[in-house]
Image (cartoon, rainbow, N blue to C red; front, side):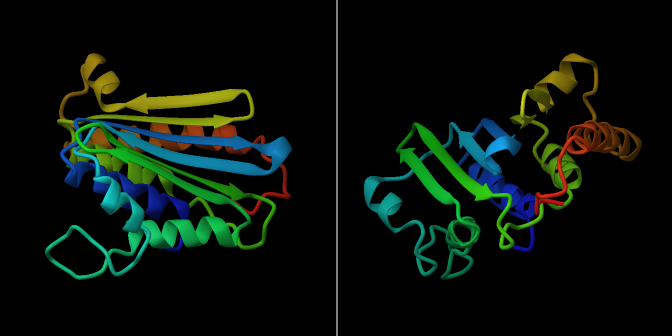
Length: 188
């Protein structure tokens, strides 16, 4: 994975494969502490304690299409290389919570990437799910979700014009937050 947005997509897809109906994606950027915490919480099938202990081993996966699972191990590695941390909690039939923290002043911090593009792909591919996205920068916040869009009458997320408009809406709101960021951050 070359950026954090790709990790976001990968972890959210894990939630989809775990039959989650609710996926909460959160970014909390604290510029004063030079930290970015990225998390995904779902209400999917969850993992057994045995699987949870092995989940960051790249040679362990629940998928039958391949014999390695690199998403969580890479996520853990990239966070730790950037002076951050990795946390995962899961219970069978209760869902999973994955949280990583990156030091944004660390040269090994991955760039954010195109969060709006990956988010709209998640929304389009999983429009029947309740996917909630939130980005907090210091005390400023932006959020959007599939159910919120449906409440506003936006039901066909697969319509190309609508998808472009939502992507632009997300991008503009994120850029407004990121414009407040100092130049010492490696997220850009």
